[in-house]
Amino acid sequence: MDVLYFAWVRERIGLPREKVETEAATVAALVDELRAREDRYAAAFEDLSALRVAVDQELTDFDAPLAGAREVAFFPPMTGG
Image (cartoon, rainbow, N blue to C red; front, side, top):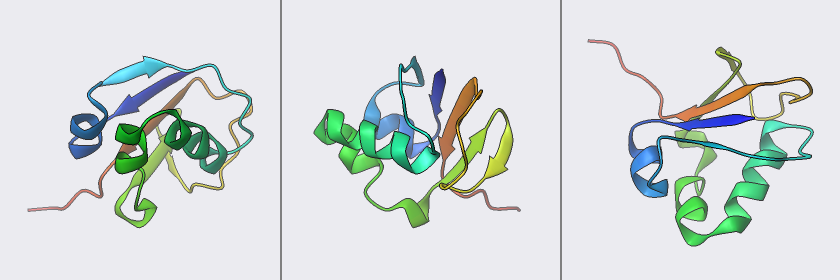
């Protein structure tokens, strides 16, 4: 699956996107796998309340299932202006 990182998440991880092989059943389980990789991932996913997630371009929660998902995107909350 493609995992996309935006804004400061991308800056902390150092990648805009990557292909990830995972057996994770939910977004939260995927985050746990990513956190365990390296310190840069742990730093990016330290505070999930500061992040939003989309699965296949649909905003969702971290307990969302990943079955059949092709893309997961992580980004900070957006503000209007």
